[in-house]
Image 1: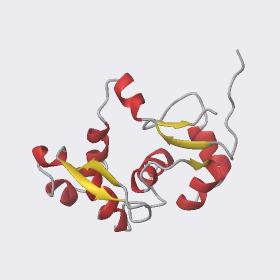
Image 2: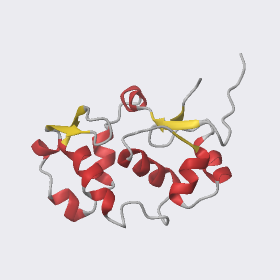
Image 3: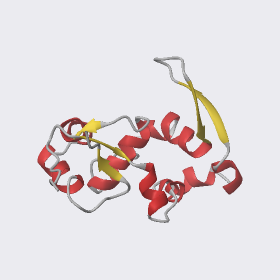
Length: 138
């Protein structure tokens, strides 16, 4: 069996099935990353409520939880939400949340978070999976 070794051009994304397989809830992780003020905006019942969101580029309607909607439409504009001083795995997770989990290469992700591609690859391209972020195997 050949071992897959990601490169700086390998695309990464949040693998939502990783959370299920590991008995974790992605919504708990997302709420952990919110400020106390942001957390106060959501009650437990509201956090899981499904909302329609229209993709401004394609016009497609997607459903997402209220938590995810607020992350993408409101919290993403908070300068502290994507802060270069955060740990790399947490910062990458936040970028993928904000961009709708569109795959990014290690180079593209590095450019967005102000880190070196080699640093991104070293953190996310190894055997350990952080916050469900995995390479896309082609």
